[in-house]
Image 1 (tube, one colour):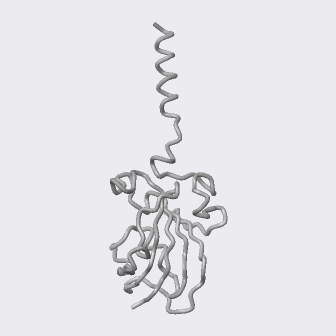
Image 2 (cartoon, one colour):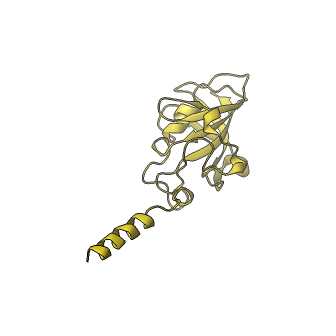
Length: 156
């Protein structure tokens, strides 16, 4: 009986030891766990106290985005495995929102603030700054880390 109990425990632990990063959308630190085509290496990015990682791919020269202002952005979003889940660029329709008003996921409010018009920023959002434990089924799984390329087009 003791042998069967040990085998059952071993099976249970082995079953839980799969690579859940591909299905859950979670991603480990650094560049590990991110599709190569995303060009993500969090060790080379700025990390905020909240856990947001960002890199200014292109510095803007225009007005600076600040809380309370309406901003227009083009963006593309991916899961860590490289699956694109949304893109305003593909639609040809910029996305407008009021910065800091809670109209978007928290990582966007934080990650777009301080950008200058014409700038482009790569954001890596941990689940807590994205869609959290619930995800946004069926496109975004629970506890998913998300990668965004955001271009600030306008500040109003």
